[in-house]
Length: 229
Image 1 (cartoon, rainbow, N blue to C red):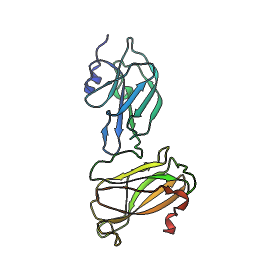
Image 2 (tube, helix red, strand yellow):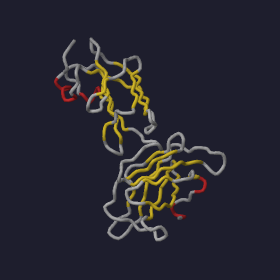
Image 3 (cartoon, rainbow, N blue to C red):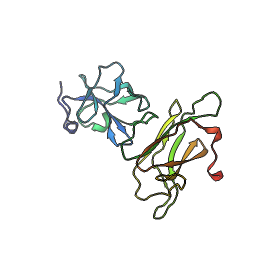
Image 4 (cartoon, rainbow, N blue to C red):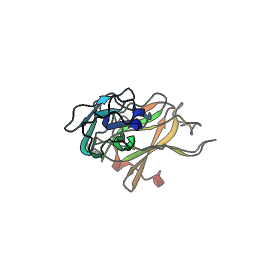
């Protein structure tokens, strides 16, 4: 068997790889391996490296392959990933990036945010009738302008999963938003919910560095456009 090409040595692998998969938690910004089931159809289970990469060893002779790749979060914290990937033959001159599939995972409503981050979890349904989940809605946390602070919207949108559940997360704030006079120790915020070209908002009171779970399902039909708030 051919040795590991020098350009692959940085991955610190025990033998020449056919395919390397990197799954990233977008909130923590780290590679994830624990509680993930990753398969390549027709191949044995991968080796998990100390750096949290999934690796399949190559077969001789090296050749290009098309592989069905699946990744499933066993605790439900991330949405499933399913893709057909084309992998080139791993020969001298092929960059490591060409045999690497890098995928950013999509957190679901079961995601557990890190301590100290501001987060809002809940479930989105169509209306007050029989529960009908609304999937694929992009949700961000928005804070109003306060003294020494520009209006701020969380840079990354959460996406409602197939059950309508979501977990919107943003990091600690450098300045305090407007306090909510009705609820001491909290500040005013709102969720912006984008469903295609339609945008709705929901007012909230949040605590710094805390997770808030909306106790009842959020009804899309009851939400108002931003200009009506």
